[in-house]
Amino acid sequence: MGEDKYERIVDLAVRRGFFWPSYEIYGGVSGLYDLGPLGTLLKRNIVEEWRRVFVQRHQEYVVEIETPMIAPSRVFEASGHVESFTDPIVECTKCGRKYRADHLIEAASGVKTEGMKPEDLSRVIVEKSIRCPQCGGPLGEVRLFNLLFKTTIGPYADAVGYIRPEAAQGMFTAFRRVFEASREKLPLGIAQIGRVARNEISPRQGMVRLREFTIMEIEFFYDPKNPSCPLLDRVRNRRLRILTARDRLSEVDRPSEYSVEELVREKIVSGEWHAYWMAVASEFIERLGVDPSDTYFEEKLPHERAHYASQVFDQLVRVSRWGWIEVSGHANRTDYDLSRHSLYSGSDLTVYRRYPSPVSVKRRRVRIDKQAVLRIYGEKAPEIFRALSSINLDTLDLSGDEVEIKGLRISKDVFRVEEVEELVHGEKFFPHVIEPSFGAERLLYVVLDRAYSEEGERVVLKIPPRLAPITAGIYPLIEEEDLVRIARKIYRDLVEAGFYVIYDESGSIGRRYARADEIGIPYGITVDKQTLEDNTVTIRFRDTREQIRVRIEDLVDWLRKSLSPS
Image (cartoon, rainbow, N blue to C red; front, side, top):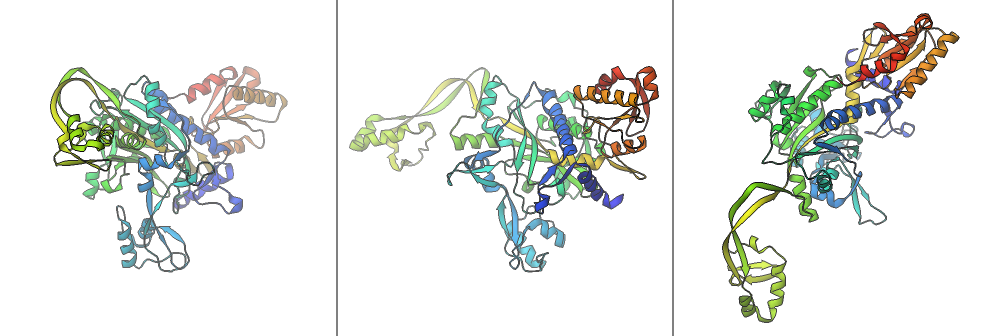
């Protein structure tokens, strides 16, 4: 199998209906893929497993919402994406082809480009004499390319909007509504599963890097002054493989193993909730069929982190073609998003923290000396009063002789500063946020890569049974009327019970098993002569080929128990 395993997976995926390039009849579009009948079912099961692990099991803290794919430009100006969601691009001055500059440099020269600015990349292109891979022409200056898909909302050209590159901003802008609907309790997780789009310059790696895909995210809001995680005992002893930023800077390239308790105690992660969700992510990836030795978390260096994050760990999984690929990101977004949206929208997105008992505090208070305003400014006094009424006087800097307010220069002699003592019952603050984020289509490819195996001339997709697109195949051993009648009734009963199953009576039973193994069906249910005698059927297990007998009336319960969460 070796090096061409990827090609074999893609061939199987296209031939049996998992995925294929979109718009094939027009030549396809890079970074866009269709999911076929089996791919759609597999993705749905992956999404449902994520929902079960991250939302349903945490429903005392996490709720799920749904927000639009399109948002007005102001949302992404506030989030920083209009300014910072960019990749470096370079154009051939001869043929006009455009390339992702950092990828082109690394492929052509082996130079590591992480963290380089456009001018640094341009310099490397000149120093290494890198030219256009297509025509050999010279390359221009590297510039930044924004990855947001731009559109207009309605018929007006100035009503600019963008297709979201992540689901997060809809959760931040809806935070106040969800917080109030959740009885104003923290911590609070808001989950969302939905489509996103990123206008990648030159997407590579098939299903791994797409221009449109389904994202599964949680924005988990908590009080930074009360950051403890009451669920930590559930995962305290779970061991995670971590490659820290410190190790990376020391050129250590092998992850070390830590318990979740050690990650928190040694402050390797930013806090308990950050460590907790990473532990949940490690369990989730194992449920997809990935061995713990084939996954680890890599801490991103400061220049590698997104603009909104104070600490980020990428969860990596080893696949056959590309080695280690990212399957999820775990970011501490602090209060960046809520504070920015509050600033840009003018809406109060803070939460009130009530003190156990009132606290006496001294505050600086600035008052207006109305008589001084009238004396100094005479007829202009009403204009001065209007300007002063529009601001918070307590924030004024009165260190100089004058202050400027709305274009008016106002003497500090009109102000009186005093210190007052007040009883304070609480304070407002912006919650901090931990974000675990997954891409569903990338996980679909990971599941296929881990599941694909060859046994002689047989291909077997050893997809975990809970995720398998089709749960069971129903087969009459031979095309005999009584056996066919029973097999078809079993098929109808299982369909009515909610299972996805197939009925197959074509060819030898061995060929039917082989066809089912190739698409990952975990159970084969065969109706044979013994069925007529004792009302039992044979259940064959895909991975071991072992067989057991089960009564027909027990089939539904047996399958449900076999697929139930462990």
